[in-house]
Image 1: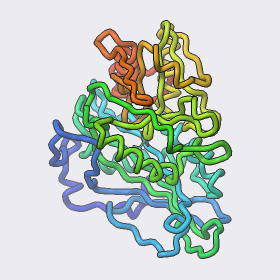
Image 2 (image 1 turned 45 degrees about the horizontal axis):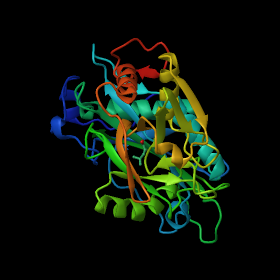
Image 3 (image 1 turned 180 degrees about the vertical axis):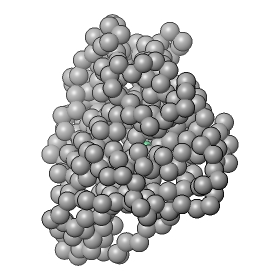
Length: 356
Ligand code: COI
């Protein structure tokens, strides 16, 4: 589908040159919402398929008080990033098809119709292009794109909603953690669990996120950056942090917990596994016991929002374990290799970036 005929254009859109930037303090972007110009919306009914969406001005949406998403949490979100190419004038979106596929898997779990991969990617591209002036200058950050799939139709008894809304908005972002690119400090959470077998930990449903807020706030009060969850059955195996996946390095081997249905199959996680193997590292996806943190050389987290964040320490049952985060750390090397592809600094031999 091409850009809808009803694409709202204002005089300033016409006058605006391609190189014009929005009025943003690009040097102080954190991970906060900055309202941009446009969002994309597409709707469909329960037994139908998504067909036609369109851009509209970014703003509030109207929902029935009995919308499925508001009452029963029938919703998914995604996150991906667009960059200005570091050399040249193009825009790059990182692996949008992967987010599209993940949304389809999540939609199946949550009984929702999902946009096709093409519809999803087209909507992301339209949203990025329409908000181009909000994409940070090269090296300053990215445009974080947030697709949502919501049960927007009214329900009262517990059942799938009668109508669904696919929405894409975007905001310029810099570093996720307040530490910036500095190493982060985690605490292992062994009382609250993020996911359980047979649950929804492996899909990106909105209902996986609010339940971690309480433990996260308590950890932040104690000075930690984020929490690291254990599995809910054995209370012994690493799962993920509240917003990112985890890797450890020991004896030169990288390991990350296998997803097992309780851990989100992060797109950055998958990309880092591939990049590390290309660089010659052995990477294992397996059960990783919390005790392996005691003598790991490095620990780092990965995610779209966090990219690759070196972990300086992890606290578990009152004991603090420290890790190498120096300039020679493997995590730094992986970060650089990933970002180089994302911003077009090196040739994208994997076909991961969609150029516009
Ligand atoms: C992302 O990394 O894109 C996420 O969706 C995590 C979110 C909690 C910011």
